[in-house]
Length: 304
Image 1 (spheres, rainbow, N blue to C red):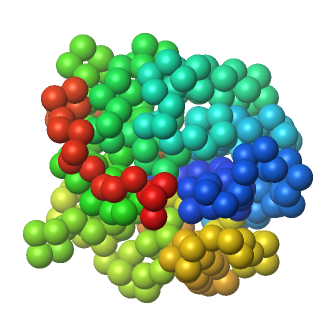
Image 2 (image 1 turned 60 degrees about the horizontal axis):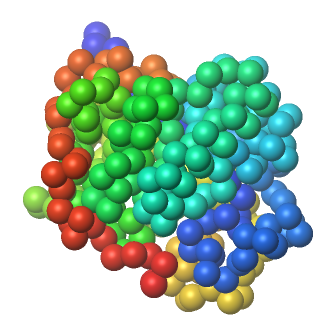
């Protein structure tokens, strides 16, 4: 019997007020004055993973780690991978190369100090590595990261790099750095996001189950899924000033997310992202990010 494929399970650790959908209506200077729910929600996620016996990667903001070190220590103590989600959820293409490099250093310093482990993986906030950031992978490589999972290879109004490979690729000819995109599935020649987050909450469970099985069996690739701790928290505060579209995306189906997630982690085999890197590196294609057309990306979500 062929063993089930191990898929990559990941959690983007940020609080409800730090999401891209609210960045125009919630000032960063007000974050500390708001109700923080990330610690309790992340503990709930860890409880679920412990019950099922799965290990995952927690892409964590340095901002969160600095304020809730006990959560970070539990992540590490329970055998999960601690990885970087940047310092304070600033999108990469808004930073520029120099500020991005500093953001990486600052976040890594906090995470390693609190967690006591080396940080080898990175995920950009809002999957914001795209053709506008041809320098980003080189900076990650210079700082010694083994992999990034920062590309969503779709066209979408919130993020996306529609021409990027669907599966693991090498973005630099002179580096072992691997980019592992979040999962998509091809339907009638078009790519559809199927890697978790809002898509998992909004779509019926059967679609995610079908898509992941298709990626495993037809494409012969591991799926990469993600979600946020705030997505299992239907009682979080409501942001009245956000657009109707942002509020629909953020709040829809929060009450069903926890049971859907519990079903997903039981129906498939899961593991840490860093455990997939060696396997993915052996057959990752080279994709020259520096040669990409900066127009080959989705519209800037800041104007949405």
